[in-house]
Amino acid sequence: MLNKDVTSKYTASSSRGLVKTSINVLVFLLIIISVILLLFYTPSFLTEDESKISAVLLIIITLWATGIIPEHITALLFFLSMILFSLAPAEVVFSGFISAVYWLVFAGLVIGLAINETGLGKRFAHRIVIHLEGSYLKIISGVVLIGVIFSFLMPSAMGRVVLLVPIALGIANHFGFAPGSNGRTAIVLAAIFGTFIPAFSILPANVANMILAGLAENQFNLSFLYGEYLLLHFPALGLLKAIVIIALIIWFYPDSPSEKQYRELTASRKISKNESILLALIILLLVLWGSDFIHHISPAWIALGGAIFLLLPGISIVSRKAFNEKINFSSLLFVAGILGFGGVISSSGIGDVIAQHFLSILPVEQGKTFINFMLLNFMAVVTGFMTTLPGVPAVLTPLSAQLSQATGLPIESVVMTQVIGFSTIMFPYQAPPILVGLQMAGENISSAIKFCFWLTIVSLCVLMPINYLWWQLMGMF
Image (cartoon, rainbow, N blue to C red):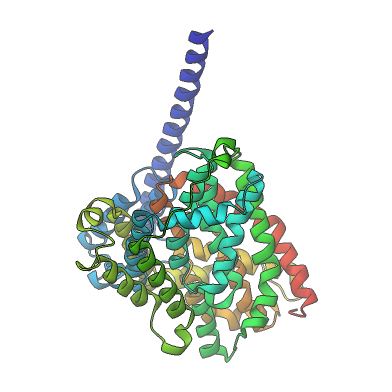
């Protein structure tokens, strides 16, 4: 019987490996075919240079989306190919390294390391798990709820992810979910997606929201009030989407918490000096992040100041050894590659060209309100796939007047459909906070790819029609 079980497991493992290899080969062949077509057949709506850039970007997108090779190596390939073939200026290709987002990620990794090194993450987790005991559903729902609450308190999505992931890992450890288990993956995804996706319905809580608000005000004199924006988007994009996130996580990653861990609660110990210093710093950071409308200092530079403080020789909460050995520098390369990727698309004009091409082929027609609404959402989703999320408002907002005229929808409604679009994430590479959270937790990107795919399907088929009905009640059409 034992030999039979071993043989069965070996056969199943071999079958999975064969399927994965076949998929990788298929993806590689599709890349080669697509690149050949783009290099030797220039589409009518692209110039020869744009076609070459698109060929390289297609390779990079596919490698990131499938995870065939490590993400940071793909980022290095992006840097090399862009510079080697003179496809984009160096200041654009390497723009990610001077971006505020890059330094926010760096600072976040340092702060996250400090939370783990001092044991403050375990302390937070212990306080939280007392209220989550009872069932797996309660654990996952509680983690998502914490993420949503943080979205109202802290404007930086990257900062929220960086603070929540170490706490999520502490919660997973408490309930006995070992690395590689469904429960650990589920709690990490609940923390990341719970604080990132519903936050698109909260005006200051994500970068794309603020870019949209700024562009809409500059170009069309549309001012979004916090309460009006929240009322329009939170019921479907915030509340219902959070419920969908919980349901999908539990469906795809079923598990049960260890009862032994329930009974063996860690005895409360006196808070250490380093924990006290770090806790005071985190509270200060939260206050400064929450009051950025007063001092106008970027969350990135606030976080970087906090990270430098933690690294100071006299403080040494994060030691030189811990910094050298435990900071995930590959994730920094990955983030820089993602940001540079978006910069190349923007500077090359490819995003604008493709958006204009979509506008010319979309079957929009005045009077067909629901169809036009869904097509505009779909256009925003696809644009986000090609430009990353902050690029959606940058590309589509200038086209809003044309889209309004073509569909017969009010320009405010056309602009707001972008929120539904860029909150629907097809691949993790579109959103650096998701990628950084996965890197910090040591989770495989494939788990997030599967989750994103099914969340997109549910969003397109269920949540978007519900959005349409809600918008009708709100008088948006």
